[in-house]
Image (cartoon, rainbow, N blue to C red):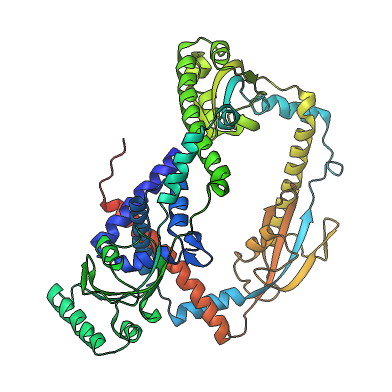
Amino acid sequence: MRESALKGLIDRKLLLQGATDAKFSFSDAALDQQLLQTPEFQVDGKFSADRFDQVIRQLGYSRLQFRQMLGQEMLIGQVRAGVAGSAFVTDAQVDAFARLEKQTRDFASLTLPADTTAVKVTDDEVKAHYDQHAKEFMSPEQVVLDYIELKKSSFFDKVQVKDEDLQAAYQKEIANLSEQRRAAHILIEVNDKLNDEQAKAKIEEIQQRLAKGEDFAALAKEYSQDPGSSNKGGDLGYAGKGVYDPAFEDTLYALNKDQVSQPVRTDFGWHLIKLLGVEAPSVPTFASLKDKLTTDLKSQLVEQKFVEVTKQLEDSAFESSDLSQPAQDLGLKVQTTAPFGREGGEGITANRAVIQAAFSPEVLEEGSNSNTLELDPETVVVVRSKEHLQPQQLPLESVASSIRTQLATAAAKAKGEALLAGLRDGKIPLAAKQDGRDWKSMEAVTRSQEGVDPQVLQTLFRMPKPDGKGKPEFASITAADGSFVIVRLNGVNQAAAPTDAEKAQYRRFLASRAGQQDFAAYRAQLESNAKIEKF
């Protein structure tokens, strides 16, 4: 888990560096538009600053942190789209893929079941196999743990919220309410093609046309370089404070309805901003928010208490020679797991952190209490080894049945391989029945044919084309139930030419696959060129 998370962080950093080196970028207006159009931040179809704040607080972000994170995601998305979206395939590749995809095959299969009733396996053979492979029939190494479990939810009924704290929270909540302003803008970007002076001259030219009575929305559609709003006449919808660039926001909140600003400079260029509308905030009553505020405040207190008690548990467990004292100190109960091995068990013993701690030298060999282990954000445990069960030889009677099945399967395979070899070299003539069993024949089978074992299909379409009529190819598989299956390929049928619709579908699939491969190669190249130090 830790290695996977670390790899994810490294990949993210590499892609952001790659985006910077390749000069990928986006405007503040594009980022604003992304925020405004996110359904999770909307109430009744309109952006809500309160809803936005609530969601990002739950995610653990401030406004600035979330904008930075979203900006990084947009850059990575641009890189992915730029690399993966540039992949292409030729007509020859499409035709070749179509020939393979639409190809059908005629085949037959013969199944020799691993039937313990049909294959006679004596008790002496079972005993001999057991003696020769004794190390294969051992019980797994297992441990039994004592543990203390601490749950965050157990504190919820133990904390109380004061009335004055509720009132303070209410005042803070309504203080954060702000009016919503509906803005429209025209953006002329400052970039490699247009310097600051040229961009400002262009926006002033548009300003003069507005002064002569031309329509703001029409000019926005014609000239604005914000792809998210230009086709809407520059309309950005309703938003509260904290969403836009500070210079943009200060100007917007200084405007009267239908007023157009003077040219405004932001990091991405020059704007003309028009205030289309204003919505006053709706202030909820204390009674309507009391339950929510109580839950929020109690959650904060529970979080604080949980962190404090977790630290107490860790310190007490470190200082104690068993779990009795930490349990007594914190009013908790020492519980015991069922035996489990290194592959884990059920309940807490399915957790990878618990498994690693249970078999660590400190816990298993030295008899120490573990550190606190987080099962999930709501639960921590401390574990201690109670019993170490070493591998033991399993008695013959407990494994005889599995040995009998194993020997029957081996006999079926040996018999099947002998038959397969005879069919291949012609020493055994091909007949309607082989070894008393019928061939099951099918014609014009596709790669996704229903009613055919996927393992058989996969083998069938990997087989080489027969040399000619009456000269089939043979292959074999061992089925999940131990049966030996002989696959006979009788012929390969070339498909009709694909339709234009099929070609288009194949081209999209191949281009998507090539794009994914190109992006993976690009990411690998970034990693190979980077200097990465892990601590």
